[in-house]
Length: 357
Image (cartoon, rainbow, N blue to C red; front, side):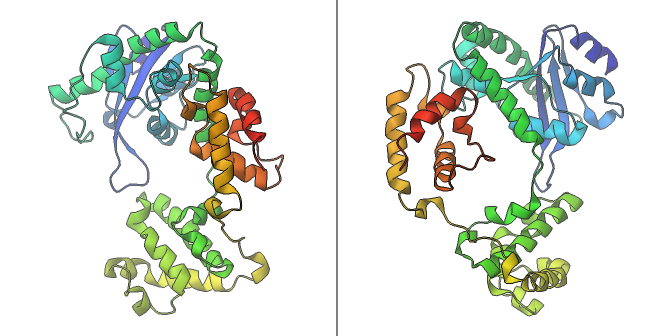
């Protein structure tokens, strides 16, 4: 590991990828790390290594660009496994979107477009924790970084004189920054499907239940729905049962056996909350006055201001348009800057803001 990482530190950029398993777990379980420094492809077996300090130092080395593709899950792996994100980092999917190849373009498409090679994806469903891995699986894993570095080189050359190169860097820095945001478990209830249908008192119960579910999932390393299904949380908050027999009407007996008494206790905690401490009602954006009109106005304005060399969805996704509208109707709070009013998107966001009413 130390020799591989020392060699990699001589490069200006290295390609990175990970293979992992996540079927029933809250956290991804790392099965393989792929590294290509331009001279050597290394397939690193994390199940046999105890000292990762050379690799962590490589991730943190500010003089070496770490190149990934569609990096969000890889970032989660690095953060959880090593408590270190790859910095600085460039994502070829982001680069490709600014090079006019479409948003969320797949790696195989980039390999075909730039290198004329059709990737064999036959090993994509591999159990990456199984040992030994066969030659097809190892070649599949190696290809992910072997082709990534030359693609990065070609994209870099294309974007070097582009007016969007700074925007690419901003986007990749934003991906890293988002991974560093600490999740507020007290707001998890807002993500529960149909939570908007509940009263403030019912939301108070749901808030406690949703926070407990995340804490339990992290403690036991279990996927959220393997702790308690989301639909069951909603039902518990709505019905607020007092006996486990009521839970059995909509939950699996095993769930009730393991968590029944705890859930009833959590419901009682929620019921004890004073009305002045209830969460605010959840209002769906689509139900807000003027939403549909303003959304159409923003989409129309977007077509007018969209540069010919940039995809409209890259400038402003529907999520970002919704965020801008929500910020506008909330009175433009200074402590919450919408993504469309920050960085390279700011001129576009300011133009979109002019059509809101």
